[in-house]
Every structure is written in C-alpha cells, then in structure tokens.
Image 1 (cartoon, helix red, strand yellow):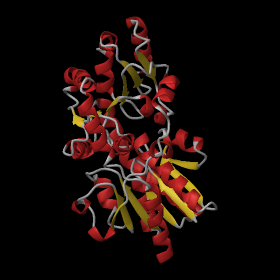
Image 2 (cartoon, rainbow, N blue to C red; image 1 turned 180 degrees about the horizontal axis):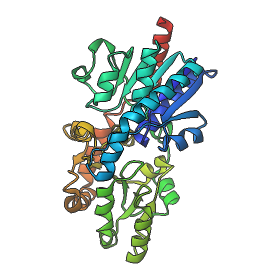
Image 3 (cartoon, helix red, strand yellow; image 1 turned 90 degrees about the horizontal axis):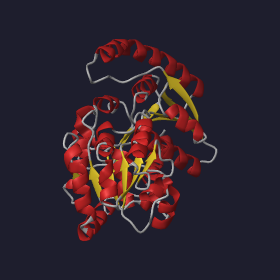
Image 4 (spheres, rainbow, N blue to C red; image 1 turned 90 degrees about the vertical axis):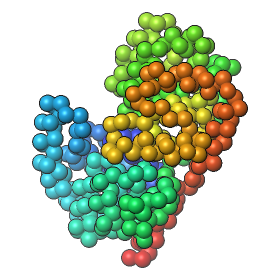
Length: 370
C-alpha cells in the first residue's frame, strides 16, 4: 500500500495526520507513506521527527488581516498555487500512490485537486463542525469524507460521509499518566491547583496577553499555571515571569511535547477551540474554558465551542472578553468542585475512540473496492 497524506500548517492538522499514518503502519507494516506539506510550516519539522518522509510545496494561505504586507502576500498567492500544483503533479506521478488523504491546511488543496485530476482516489478528513470552502470544493471529487460532527450533510454529499471522529495522539487517547507524574514533570506542587493554558501549537496572542497582564493573579490566589506560549511570545513571557517574581507559580513553555503529562497535571484547561484540541480534551475529561480564535475561516472555532457548551461540556468566553473575564471565570470554576466534576463527565462522554482506525477502515474499503 502506498499512501500520500497532505496538509498541515498547525498541530491541529499535523497530529491527526500522524495518527492516521501510524494507524496505517500498524495495520499494514509494509505500507509506504509520503507526506506533502507547505514549505516553512511546522509539518516540515514535526513529520520527519515522527519518522516519515515529507515533500514541501511553495504554498501559503490567504491573509485575512489587510495590512500592506499581507496584501502583497495575497497578490503572490495565485503564482504560489500554480507552482505548487506543478510541483505536486511530479510528486504524485513519481510516488504513484494508491490513495491520497487530505487532512486540511495549505497543502491539501493543490495536492488533492491534482490527485483527482490525475485519476487517483482521494479521501478527506474534515475535523471541524463547519466545513471550509476548500474542503467543500475538494469533496466533489473525493471518494469518502470522514467527519467528526453530526449534520455535515449541510456541506458534503450525504452518500460520501462517514462518521469516524477526529484522530488524536495515542498517548492522549490512552492517557495513563497520573496527576503526580504530570506535576513532577513540570515542577509544580501536586497539592495545589494547576491550570493549563494552551493556545494551540503556534500560540494565541489574546490568551497569552490575558496571562501576561495578570501574572500576579496566580501568586495572589496560589494557583499554578503550565503555560504554552508558542514561539512568538515565549521570550517576552519568560522575562515577564522573572520580573514579576512568579516563577514558582507560572511555568513557561514555548511548546509542550508531552501534552499527556500536561493534561494529567491540570485541574482545568484554558484552550482555543480548534477541532483537534477539542477532540483531545474530550479524552482528558477536565473542565475547560474555550476561547475561540476569531481569525479563522467561517468562524468555525466558535461553532466547535458552542457544540460543547450546548451539552454542558465547556464554558465559552469570546476572544474580545477573555482579558477581563477569562481568569476570574477560571477561579470561579476551580472553587466549584461539583461543577468541575459535572463538566469533566460531560466532555468525556463526547470522546470518540479509535478514530484513526476507523479512517484506515475507509482507506481499506476504498482500495478493496478498487
């Protein structure tokens, strides 16, 4: 079996892609897997680190904030799309896959569109509750579309939809680390409350600013924080924590590789509302405050978050309100053990296990049919 997996740009696309690849290799040890990503994006580092080969395309996404620099980048986009389609045509021809899987991200569009034109079987993995324009377009020629939310026939042909859930990292799905192990790893006291803040693998400016502007909150309330800043604010965060003298309470991390231990240590989580982050949080079963990013297509993170809030599985705070409401609400939750327990049970009930295996089931089905 030869499989191309395309997508990336953030951990929300890369981690499910790797989960699918690992599930393919577990079921078909002799399978050959090639990733196709975007040059300069984090998949070009994370995929080889996981042991897989990756080819990069000179593709980029549409810049939604209209600055002079971004307008110039957007003017270059058609040229980058043409170059990427030409390059990926050669990659597909040389590798000659049995199937091409798209997981979202910049590289998915040229890869799956070219694969379909060349007559290859394509499969989409849509992570969000609200499908973006690219996947709605790619769905027209896809053989199957694996989804994680109900009601996706609003966007895709009903006969192509397969409910699989979102694949998450195996160490999260099978979370076995204890609270004390997680606390020891991050150097926090397991007898005191622990909050985890993650803005996604690239960081989240408003969540980071909320914390940066309120560092005394953690010392004053004797609450510990494990903080993933992303690379853009890491140095500023380290300096601010040192200047405020709160190193005992606030542990700064640019990127957390052992998210299983971070989740194990946490009593509650503050997070963006990306689809994969939510899928992981369902397995973790901790109370969570979701702060959806406003800078995403079709505001899909808000829709993801509200799907949980409607079931009592999360509390949602808008990005514009998080600076004033986020930490007071977190403190209120931490002091209400009964509510935290109810929220943890409600979100854990939404977990969908073995999603990667279900996607491999569809790959096998399509190839057997072929």
